[in-house]
Amino acid sequence: MLATIGFAGLLSVLSPATAAAYVEDDVQKQALAFSQAALGRAVGDYSFTDMAGKAVRLSDFHGKPLVINFVYTSCIQSCPIITHTLSDATEVARDALGEDSFQVISVGFDVGNDTPERMLSFARQLGVSREKSWNFLSGGPQQVAGLTDALGFQFFRSPKGFDHLDQVTVLDANGVVYRQVYGESFETPHLVDPLKELVFGTAAPFSSFEDLIKKVRLFCTIYDPKADRYRFDYSIFIKFFVGSTIVLWMLYFVVRNWWRIWRNSRRKQPETFIDPAAP
Image (tube, rainbow, N blue to C red):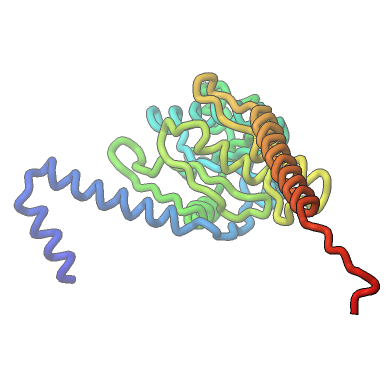
């Protein structure tokens, strides 16, 4: 209570613009904390409707990593930007990890307005309606509220439509929140790196040859910021080969010199003559 009064008192002596900045900063911090609290949370099974009017459930996407973001179709600024950013990042991810290595869904949170028809129109306007393994979904109040709470996504009505955190959530193959990505124009590795960890990472390393291959791809697939692409880095193998060769040669010389020293020391030892007739 005292903290609230103190904060309110502070706002009363500030200019409207400065006071609004304080309030906005405080809201953003709360939204970020709420979002981060979702990490490690198992998300429940919610039902939605896709752009074709078909009913789908969140559990339908289990088995592969899942990327989720929230939009509202009347948005003219942040939602189109983050959708374009997500499209660019997923293109890089599919090129590096495989076409069918993960799935993407965009959920309309403006219940009643974000119908399947409007979600389809939104996707078409942004040129992503034909993106492979990317679904645009509509849901009822309970489904949207349940999923947004589970993923730590908050939104508020405002004069311009909605205020919300620019957030993309990555779930693992079992529907557990693995990573949160923030910003309208986030950097490509912020999304691709956690996907790479989920696609190539294995719980029991080297339990099979396939696991070994995944581990190799995990550590050897690196991001090239100039090309904005991931590539397989063969130099790691070259460095390993060169390093191993140097170590083996050093070990060889150490063992050989030690053998020479030991052999020479044996030769220099005087031979002791024992007289059989001696008492």
